[in-house]
Figure (cartoon, rainbow, N blue to C red):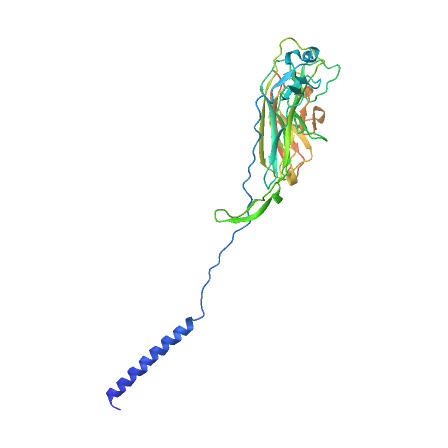
Length: 341
């Protein structure tokens, strides 16, 4: 075989090898593909918490003080056509020509999936005459001749209603847990929001809470011809409910209104695992030494810490006390008591 034929044969063999090699590679890619994973998302969300607080009609918390019973004695001549119910001496207008010692109820509805805490705070905006003393109760002893005013916020419950009375030392506050309703929602998807819970169609029911103000006067006291009564301010607020809450004190400083008067603080014992069930003691520092306040000088009941007048009257200047709780964290809060000048 001459050299030319050998060269041509090698060319054919190499060409065939290349074709075969290419064919083998093509067969190796057949049946192979790739895929990408897509995530539908995490936990489905409920709508953002939103609560509409009540729009309080003007005049709802205006009150008439009539400790001398002048309205009843004159058969309502000044308020012709009006009806006054009760003998407590304080009257709120609840509707046209109707007055009682309890203001018209205002309501907050929780249209959410989560529970919320609704709080109402009653505080003094402008003080009244010096003769007026705030009372912690709406009942007065026959021998009590002080010019006492009882103003409180209440949840108006039919059974065991809660009350918090305004004092010269602190505002009155009440907090109510209002449960949300997850059953009013159903899963949904839109391209804008993704996977979320949405409100069900149809008529839905929700939980709510209501508050009133209530008042009374010591009608057994001597009330002069000219007495100024305090102006008040009522503030509504809300927050998402938390079962775990440490003890707290709404206002940590208080001044004695006059010699012989107790000083009070509103105390919240907290909730859940962080809650306390009571106080473990009260201490103070005197002459550089930490001392324990004898329990005869204070009381704690139904969320009110009271420093007795006998203790406060003995102070010559403001004193800081450490209020200790019996929770697992042994938490403590400092309060300042200032005696009357």
